[in-house]
Length: 218
Image (cartoon, rainbow, N blue to C red; front, side, top):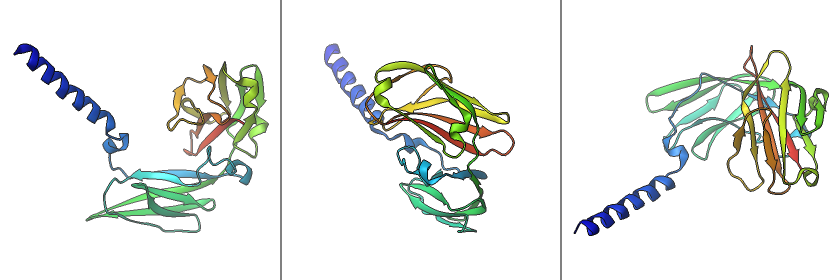
């Protein structure tokens, strides 16, 4: 009897764990409209690589809520609902107010669109030093994957005065849906084929402007 009871308990626990693992991460995400948000207008060369750069900026997750959204200045940014979230598409530098209405509640977000500013003083990929001027116009730097294939190398970004690194270096293989994080200056294994990338998210301490700087392995 005791053995049978133990088996039943184990089966129940197993199914409970399986169910918990199948619940998508966003299901637990809270509904919250930020007071301020920003995005950057990048060069056409930077935007060529859509694996690295999405023209839309995610404002907030809304789940199954019925909401109405609008931008006060569509010349600066338009706004839409897609994949259970609110997204803004930057058009030109400037500021607009994004209004979100759900039920009896109204939320407002000041959305600022910046022109790209290079935050990088220099970067190191293994023994290679990349001058900051390499990121003057474009927020992406390409390297040959074949040269670094299956090698564990250090990635380090040195930022200009007035900028700080948010988190560490995020990286992902071409077939990963979610990136992983590693401390700035640590070693990361370049693997998984062409399309491997490493990303630094820089933030201006004064204005809050954020720039995503990519090292892309072609």
